[in-house]
Image (cartoon, rainbow, N blue to C red; front, side, top):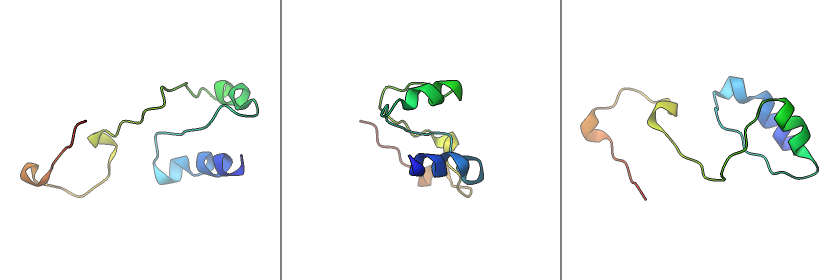
Length: 65
């Protein structure tokens, strides 16, 4: 629980947009109140979420499963 609290507190500073938490010890009660949505358990990483310097298209590779 302490780790989750730390992660949420630093979310803005670190520019995360995804937060994962297990539904243990009735976490759902406060997560729902804070407007967290229930996910499907799969994380997807989209290029617009990444912060990186300019990269030429020829230097980018994407692996799809």
